[in-house]
Image (cartoon, rainbow, N blue to C red):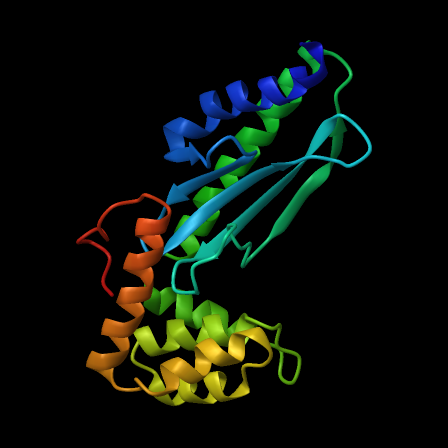
Length: 206
């Protein structure tokens, strides 16, 4: 019974801290997600292969990618260091602090990505010439297209490589305002259904 005491503490304390901020647990995993319209806020209490305890990862997941078997961490952040389980009281306090930090970062992300226009500006400006991550150009291209900048979207889709290339090539065939928005909205709606999030909120302009 005591073997997974740290896991039970994570589950119970994360619920106390994260649920009021709109997070729900993904199945029985250590991952919590919150619906932010065209993206998910993701919090993971990542286990170690060697010790009882947890890391804290916070991420943004864009809902316009392909349907994943697991939540992709499209903008991942590792917060702090591994926290070992030493005692129930010590670990409960640590998880509580981690959860509160995750909520703070989620609030920062919500202020950064309130609209596709704001998101496009950030994602495009963050790209390093000649050093795009595998999916960075694709995500920036989608955001640019949704913001109406099809010249940038086309350029970024054409630069997408490896696994992102097939998705980018697919969207290249829809580079006009009506078709592009309809196609991407379809991706978002499908992913929302996959995660059990319901209809896209009317306030989200896609």
